[in-house]
Length: 322
Image 1 (spheres, rainbow, N blue to C red):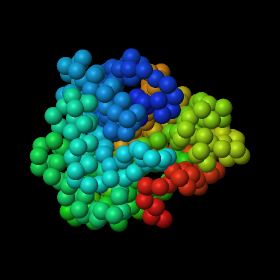
Image 2 (cartoon, helix red, strand yellow):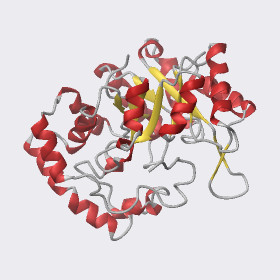
Image 3 (tube, rainbow, N blue to C red):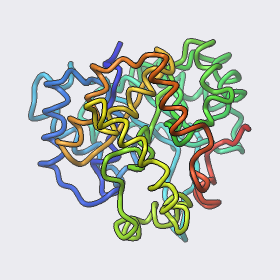
């Protein structure tokens, strides 16, 4: 059992802008004070930097290890000869990466270990068996998968219980509703929603076009390119106004909407700012009525976003299923 809102620690690297360990530790201080318990990281976030930040915090705070439920991932490695990533689902690779993650985090076991991306040359049943060996060894308490299709989840779950599936899910990305959300509910699998505020589009201060051009991922993302960016900024204006009328931040309202989609839905927003983290946590005390949900749907109806959520290069890895 975890707090309904977790924290996506990709923000502890420079993925969305520069940050430092002091700022990241301040966010972890706030997480502990607020009862936020689930931390999500990966071996490739800042090439181990995110895990090291969490590890140094745990080392300096005796209660942190018992408080936090830590998830990390393996299966992606950088391409040494060119751009892009390589997906490696072999036992040897995942075993080595798990050991590296445990060392950086300074823990003997992680609560949840995800396969970050599938290598389609390795049957899902085989890699699930690999993850199951980590559970048997005591170094992993539960297993999960990131960005997989509902059919893949069923095949994996038949081999070993899957605790969680992670996928992008928000008012701007609704594709999990076409099978993944339902399959998770049926199988008793947590649906961990990353990028729950639409990579800032569902906040009071979306990343500017100029700032997006300085970020490697966003400058090539269709939703942050002209003319889509301008259209998305205008489309979300009514949502920001609605949140203000309710006395909430737009980010808080976006998270509250996600929490209303099912008890198995666990948003993991990330931020580099303590003040923004406080806005995200507003959702904890907000329960939306059916009428309020209908108003939100009228302002941002399914399919409102301009541009795909990924470019063709960014789509390499995630499983498309609809």
